[in-house]
Amino acid sequence: MRKDKNGLLLGLAVSAVLAAPMARADNPGDTTIGGLIFTDLTSISTTQDTATGSTDKDPNGFGLDVKRGYFIVNHTFDDVWSANLTTDFNLAKYTLSGTDTTSGDPVTVYGNAPETQLFVKNLYLQGHFDDWATLRVGAASMPWTSYVEGVYGYRFVENTMTDRSAFANTADWGVNLNGKGELVNYSASLVNGGGYKNPSRSKGMDFEGRVAFTPLDGSLIIALGGYTGKRGLDTEATPATHTASRGDLLLAWKASGLTVGLEWFSASDWNNVTTAVGKPTDDSSGTSLFASYDFPGTPYSVFGRYDDVKPTKDTDSTQEDKYYNAGFAWKSSPNITWALAYKSDKVTDNLKHGIDDNDLKTQEIGIWAQIKY
Image (tube, rainbow, N blue to C red):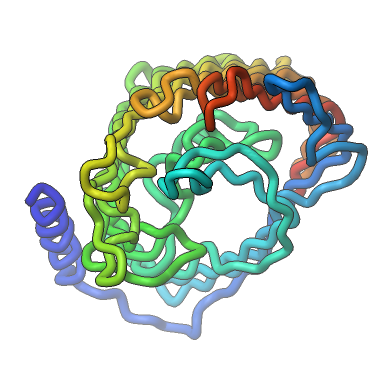
């Protein structure tokens, strides 16, 4: 009932902005083409400690990755209407989902699954009716992750916590309404729930929203967000038995080159939407602390971050993911940013599949780059 109410409210808002006067196109419009690449040249080491000893695991070794490659086309029809197409190409994806080989239930599994695929990440028609009312219909950025990425500033080194731990989508198919004023901005999306790589529909749509406050001349940032729905999994073949939900908080300070931030989330039944009736539900939570400093009058900066995620607090309370990075960045041009960084990610699970100890640790050091064109 709550989701239906959210959908009704967003639907009314969409109807209101569509009823606004439309601007007349005086020319065919303007088209711009660009792109964004995240790449790295690093040495990575992965080891797994179990009750019987320690073994090397993939990914392991020295090499080059193109983690993300975006091709971006924007077309402006007139003062109100525009369109965006953003394709997403990637060579490697770190996954955090799987199935328990004993019970058949969905569980969190940390690993690496290489892939080379091309996706449509954004494909939407936009109507900008007012600073407080911008409508997007199609595949568009989700309200939470895109906002946190903008505050964090080092997405090319690592995606933000909810994205990295697979508790949020960066984009999805549906309808988005967003707006901003001097001290407040918001974004609300009604989406299919499966993410931009899965445009299929289920029995209903999910809701994600965010509202952010930026008092003190924008130096202080306070953002609240939330998600509720079936994550695109409620079908006739596999009816949903639970509703996934997530609450989000962001507190940050950005002034005089200094950024300090805290991201926190709490989720319920995120990976248990189709769990069999009678199986236990599950809660999850995570905290991310990040900081960076831009040296005045120079292209140089330093940054660091620490994440602590507990993905299965009820069904496997011993499972914990602790991640941190630290590095030095510099801009060789307005469109190219480099970073020399070190990452460490350790997943501890003392109960999985009856094993007394099952730790997976990944360490990585090298050069990361963000290239815009």
